Length: 86
Image (cartoon, rainbow, N blue to C red; front, top):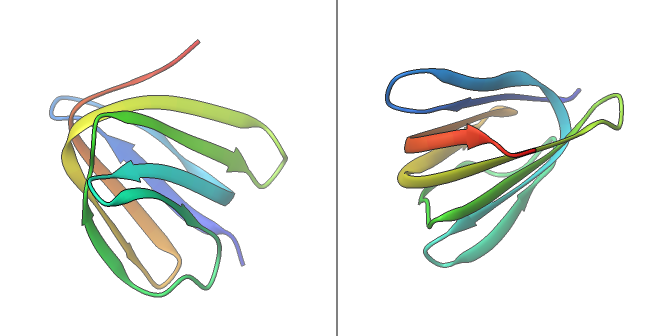
């Protein structure tokens, strides 16, 4: 079962889809999420969110000023500013 991932900014949905791996930067350091990860609520640090889709495609978004929530293979990243990179 893949992760269901949503990356949203204050004014738009930046990326939504299924992923096998997501790496995000929090104020406590980088954290990686895979299906089955324990529930987490963390504050985002300015940096990149790196997503590997279930098809192997790589997506990178910049994010800052927000939080992330992981529960039941649903990862939601809410940022004041977020945008796809490249």
